[in-house]
Structure formats: C-alpha cells, structure tokens
Image (cartoon, rainbow, N blue to C red; front, top):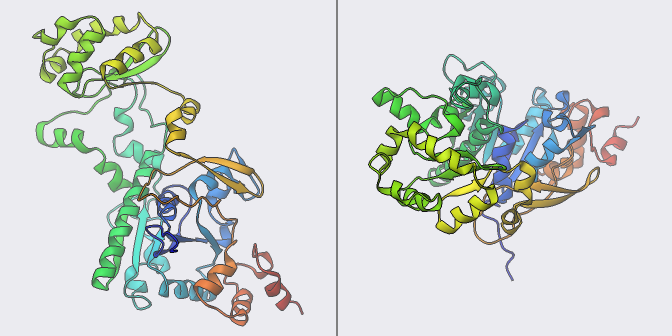
Length: 419
C-alpha cells in the first residue's frame, strides 16, 4: 500500500527567515509537505520570534510556535567560510532559498540567483523584504505597522472623527507572506519546466499598495478621495456596515439588490424596496445619510440574537461582532478543523490556530516548532550527506557559532573536541 503524499513533499526550502511575514509564508508551504529548513543566526540567538513577549521563556515563545510548525532548524553562521560552505552544500540539494531580510541584504550576503546559480542552476531565490530589492527605499527596514501608515491603510481605518487606526492584525505581513509563497511556487514550477531558476522580489510595500485595489482605481481614474467611513461602512454599498442592536454590535450587508429587498421585510419596512430614494445601489449610496438615519434606530429596538436569527432566516448577509475568544469557540471553527494540537517539551499540549490551506483530503502534519538547531544531525547527515569527520571540522571552524555554544550539538561532536 502506497503512503499518501502531501502536495509539496518534493520541495526543499532553505529559509533565512525571522519574525512574522517570512515564517508565515513558509508555514503554509510546510503544512503542505515542503521541507522548510530554518537557518538561524547563532550570533543573534536564532529567530527573534523566539523571544517575543508576553508568553516567552528562554528560547520558547508561543509567538514562535504559531509561525514555525512543521519546520526544521539549523544554526548556521553565514558570515564564516565554514558556515557558507554548509549553506552552499544545502543550495546544491534544494529548490529554494527563501529570505525575509532588508531589501539590500540578499545581494550583500550573496543569496541572490546570480550568487548561487553556479551551485544549482534551478535554484529559486525568493526575497521578501520591506521595500523590495530596487528603488529609493531599498535599504529601509520595513514593518507591518510602518507600511499600514505609509500606504494609506491607517488613513481609511477607524471613525471619521477619530485618529488614523491600524488594523488589529498584521495584515500587511500576512498578505506579503501569502504573495511570497505564491511567487515561490510559481518560480519552482518554471524552474522545473525550463531548467533555470530566478529571483522573486516580493515586498511589504508592493503588497500593501496592491491591496489598495478598487479605491486606488477609483482615485486614479475618477478622482475619488478615499476616506474613513462611519461605523466601518462600505464606501459605496449601502447598507453594509456595523449596526448597534439593543445589547451588542452586528454586521449587516446588502452586496446584492436581492439582499436589500429581503432586509426591508426583516425590518418591517417592505415599502422601502420600491421607494425611489432607496430602490437601487446608486439610489441608496446617494441617500446614504437619510437611509441610515432610518435604519439605525430600528436596530436599537431588539437584541443582536433576535436580529441575527431573523436576518439569517431571510438569507441576508450578517454576523455578530465577536471577540477573538468567541471566534475560537465558534462551532464552525471546530467543524472545519481550524485548531491544531502539538506537544511541546516546555508547554506540554498546545492548541494553535491552523493555516487555511486545503489541498486534497490528506491530513496535514502537525509537528511543533523546532528548538534552535534541533535538526543539526538530520540536515547535515541526511540532507547534505556530510561525514562525522567533516562535521567535526565544521564545528571547530565555527560554522554553527562558537563551538562551545552550539545548541543541540550531539555528544559525539563535543567529545571529539575534547583535548
């Protein structure tokens, strides 16, 4: 009987990654079966995500766990000749070098396609940076919070009379991770088809700008001025926003004309469906203030649960404004298998949100994030094929950091170094 294979179990990725955006992209690839080998800088104590508070102790953090399931870890000092030698051995047997460093760094440390193609003509070098590998901002560090301000996201988020507001989640980071994963897979496909690898230059800047989408198109072509809207309402579809019920907030939307017609019945005003002020998308947008002035007091009259029951029954798009704990406890969360469990030597049983990738029916792996340098033996012997003698030489040469400080170093290499 053949063992079922995961979709990406024939792809090996060397991930010079840290923090959020980069690890988020490769997490999805690891969930699909790719072998993701994290290269962690021993001089920095590895991925900075290992130390993110508040739930962190020594080199273990819940932040790190949620971004790095199903991956492997190797401490490697790329600045040393010995460390570079190991890295180049890995390039020869891998499909991708994936990084999320500042845009000018891949070229400086020699991990672009031109730097590595002599080792492996099919290697795909995917860089995810703040501002990309070209342009006037190439040397600037880029972080989600900064990009949400720079690219106009904060200017259109929040109440009109309030301050600019950041999204409650790191959506630039997460979206850029998705774009990097898509770009990386496209690169691997082309390299296998054509026999030639390439650079993939992905950035938070490009991602955040692309996601401006139709408001940007309206501005560029029709002079529209994007702005914050009251109660998070849609800029053109009315009604589609938050409404305050007697006891809680709910979201109600009419993105099709049929939903508006149904809503008029739910709120007890069926005549509004044919009222010339509100009959079409354009009519309701033009008379937004008047319509919402009529609707909002109606929603105050009943509980959120009562409104949602009637709206669901009528087939009107709607939902509660849940807290994150509410969302995690929603029955649909469990039904969709969106919480995974891992066993951790410090934390014991961990429950974590899953990724949303679903390809075929095979169960996805659920292995905890690696301790720093945990996969030293696997990577060097099984992946690269080094002998114990060669590994001992590399340890002595500082390939993995100061020899006395290499975490997870098997005893036989420590013993070999004893005078």
